[in-house]
Length: 231
Ligand code: IPE
Ligand code: IPE
Ligand code: MG
Image (cartoon, rainbow, N blue to C red; front, side, top):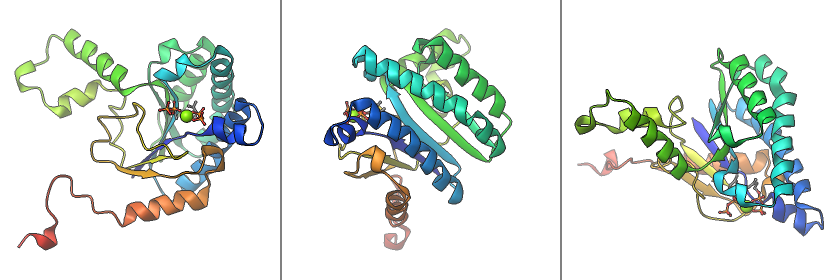
């Protein structure tokens, strides 16, 4: 199973408490750690976290800098744990625009965990689905061996950032917003969506299990018809 999280509401969580927005982000990072434990406990093999969208670069420089430092610290801090727990780490998005120290921390973690297959943790950083399509198209068009007339989705998806990942089964968005905000638009074609009003810093195991339970009772038809009604 692949669960993806749109971690939203850090700023509002902080504002509601009279705290600066970065306190929400700091608290949000701690929640990722807690949720990863629940992911592991429940045998969920793939977890993806939307941490920074390509559009988030339009935020004030101070907030961007804070977030970039936070990501770097987070990745460095959990390097050892990921190796111990056999977590394979990936990052999706245009990493070339990130600060060099963060790029190096990402690269190191990708290399250190490349041999693992127990859990797959992916962080979306400077990710936007539309930019991803452009990135894919550029590389596809550069490949002279592509048989354009017979191109299939399976061929095309090999050019996406997510080429090694299964499509998400469940996307959870916190903070009450009911939109995808340019996250995995193609990969989520048949994902189940779950929205909660809880701000990401307050998201916890209980809420996560509620989402999993809700997912469990949904009927995923993928365009087909239900076998029981097929008579
Ligand atoms: C999500 O929280 C984290 C990022 C987008 C980096 P926000 O920072 O969007 O928090 P709100 O939506 O303003 O409350
Ligand atoms: C989506 O949240 C991006 C992340 C959670 C990283 P935003 O806060 O950027 O989304 P909008 O602007 O409310 O759509
Ligand atoms: Mg937001």
